[in-house]
Structure formats: C-alpha cells, structure tokens
Image (cartoon, rainbow, N blue to C red):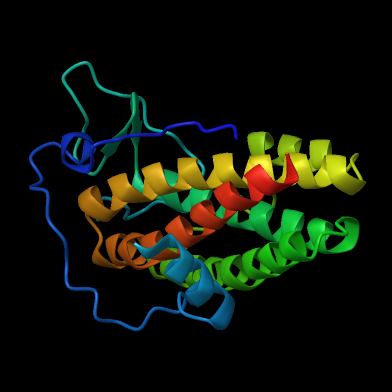
Length: 220
C-alpha cells in the first residue's frame, strides 16, 4: 500500500481570524452518499470576495503579512474560492474520465464497481459545482488542469493488471488530496454555498478514499 498523508489541521489552516466552525447545511445533498454500494463501504469502514471574477483559474500568492481577505491557507498556498472550485472541478472531471477508462480496461469486478461509483458520484458533484460557480459569476474550466491531464495520459497507456494497480494507486492519492483541500474549505470558505458543498461532499470523498485504499491493497 502506498499511503500518502495529507494531514492538514482544519482550524489552523482556515482563513485567518475565522473560528473553527460548522454551518448548518440542511440543504439536500445532491452527491449520493448512501447508495447500496457506498453503504456497504461505509459499513465495512465501521467505524464572498468573488464579485467581478469571471474565470476561476487564478491562484492568489500568499502575502508576507499573511493571507489576504477572502483567501484560505491550504498547506503553504493561499487559495481563493475560485481556486478551489477550479481544482475541484478538474479533479472531478479526471475521476469521471478515469472511471470510464477503468470500465473499459479493467477485468476486475471490484475495480469496475468502484469505477462506476466514481462516474456516478463525480458527475453529480460536478453538476453541483457548475451551479454554484454560475451563481458566483464564475466560469469553470471544461478541460483538465495540467497535473490531472498527465495522470489521464499516463493511465491511458496501460492495460490489464498494470492498469488496475496504477488506477487504484492514483485514486487513493487523489482522494487524500481532495479530502485535505475540502477540509480547509469546509471551515474557511466565506461563501455559504461553497462551504456547504465542501461539508456535504467530504463524507463521500472519505468513502471513496477508504475503498480505494482497500482495493489498492488487493490489486498490488
């Protein structure tokens, strides 16, 4: 098992001056977290600063005096909600593309089930991301970010058991990164819809990461 830890303390990395808090996100979650397959995985585990922005593709450099208003600290990077939405959208598109590739390339029934879950869940999550971005006057990318495209290109060259091993390895790593990012945004995003999306999606990402971890061990 290749385990990469992306341990980021939510309170310590949240927006400076923002208390570590949770909002009441009672709106319905369009990202499914309790379908039959995900429920099985869960059981086995047991246990605003965006006005005037028209594209969500710019990073904000950290200030020497600390993060500027409307930004969050993700590791050593200062990110905006636009940055988050862009990275989340690209990651989601990658998950869907790789899921479809796995459905075509893999002969492992468990890998195929996982891949179908990726396609279903991330397609719905991406639709919700688009709605949120539209309400904030942001245009999300329709193509993958460079790092995500490189992963797709790499896996597109593989077949059989080699594909399964690399696919599950990438899925575990990608979801560890996503969880760390969503944790920061769930505590520090100034816009309610963005923070609520991060809070609602985190349980799904944790289900994905847990099952990717288990499958990664099986196919290695």
